[in-house]
Figure 1 (cartoon, rainbow, N blue to C red):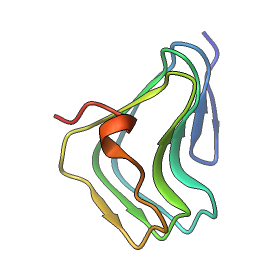
Figure 2 (figure 1 turned 120 degrees about the vertical axis):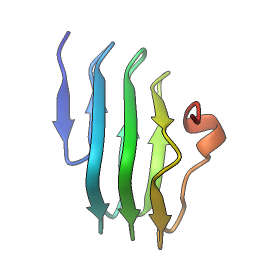
Figure 3 (figure 1 turned 135 degrees about the vertical axis):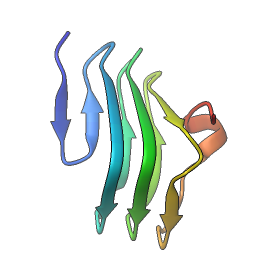
Length: 87
């Protein structure tokens, strides 16, 4: 399995990343974008601020939130229901 983290985009089939106690801000695109089948990003205590969009997925990637994150000032927060399972 290969994992590539470019800015805040995760690609690589089957990649799993856990992001905790992190601020992701001022990106013109997505704060977190999971773009590969079977890839998953779990977020806990993450602040996504002033991004083009906070959370995005593509090609079967998922985002799992532990519901203790802050999304503020993004042009679009993302469709969290589509982006992943909330816990």
